[in-house]
Length: 111
Length: 115
View 1: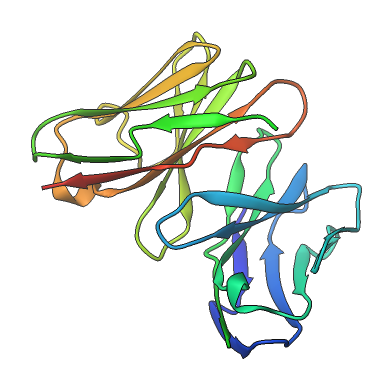
View 2 (view 1 turned 180 degrees about the horizontal axis):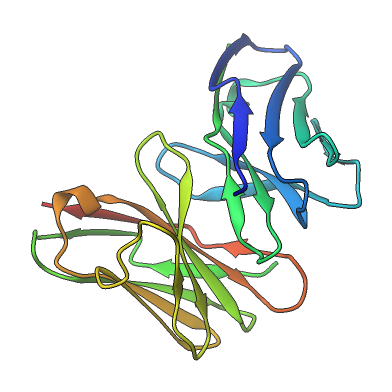
């Protein structure tokens, strides 16, 4: 059974810092891996999607990497801003197209 | 981009009543839809997979008689919470898959409060 773990569970950083969020998964047979952002009480915003054949994806200040063989992904956020404060969720898509979510990392960027 | 709409976005119902949440794909046909539940400060947990024209496949531990899922058309899936109890209060979110390929689109979610 696929399990997705995110570390750390919570993170507080001063504005301007670069930071890394970690995601690990137990079964490497995945179609893709996605990083989402969720603001309190809101739905999901897709940030980056990495196909299983890809190693990384970039969008603006965000960079996500995927090492399928080791079951790991990282989300790198450069020059963090208070507006980046949210919960970041990692999810892997299994062979039946189900998304298995990690428990998330709650990020607070302090002004 | 593709849009998935959920309705209602927020609903309050009395304990013992049933409530229906709709998930619509607005600009594509969704062969498969997924329903998730999220308790406060927890992650999303898959409840069931809904395939058009067939019975939903429920994840282990999800009561199929309590959470009725109907995927009657290629653009609409509904989740009915029957005989709702306060512990069913949660954030319910759906996603839809257009067809071949692994792109998934999420709805904006529905907050259910059972009083």
